[in-house]
Image (cartoon, rainbow, N blue to C red):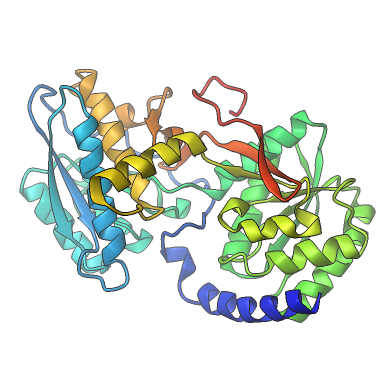
Length: 398
């Protein structure tokens, strides 16, 4: 227990810094939920599907903090282009320098130079500015952001959302007889947004939110909340506890240690995680992780993409690189159908969706996205898939 406290204290200090550093505006491996943004536009340019389609890729090449991500996004986009059969994509790359103003200027330049659709930028605030300047020219933007609050109009986001994850897990839980959930969330931006995503997903799936319990990012705050969760669950009648944690998952080890020690038995109350626990497999050894649920993309497809990328470029791709591949894959699939309206909002939001690096996905009319996810658990300190990721949007996972 003392070792857990020592590690948690250091991690929570880091998490507090991250939480105050503009987390909501960034796009990273964490996720932000679909908050019901305005409807995305159905318009866009008409194209000749038999001619090369000019696609602009906006990435922060000269941003010292994101240059590696920019490189990997471009590499992944070119890998996707090489996959296309009978479709010619003319990819032009523009440097946003990580600046919203530069992103806007480069988006306008790209359209002036013939771009029919924009892939990127990376961060939410840059995507908003880029989409604004090209909206009047009917050009759609497919950003790498996961900030669903910015989506709508001519701006679509490719990053995975909390609402998508929460809905997958609660729908699965409902089929397993779990109908009442207590939400345990960090009292910071990612925690608040995660809480809202769970509440929205619960309403969509007929699950009752029995209680909501925040915790501050401190050892004392996490410990007190964890110690009290058994009482909260018992008093509210919750049969599950849905944990959001903070932007870096720093509190998770302490929660998974202290809650079972204080009467919240994971054999009776279902633990559910909103973030991917498999990226921190050291979590699997904690008592609260045993039998818990979390969601993740199709692992076979992700491994396939990573292997192909490594073969082509001699390195492992950044976790966000697959978003660029997905964007090109969607554009290519629509152009391959011979559609003159392939780059319109109507086409981009086709209900059948597309096959991406993590499985099936589709863009939604509100500008957010839906991705096919697997439900996993922990057994004997190992990850086990309980319900595989669906291969189409007619599967049980949707």
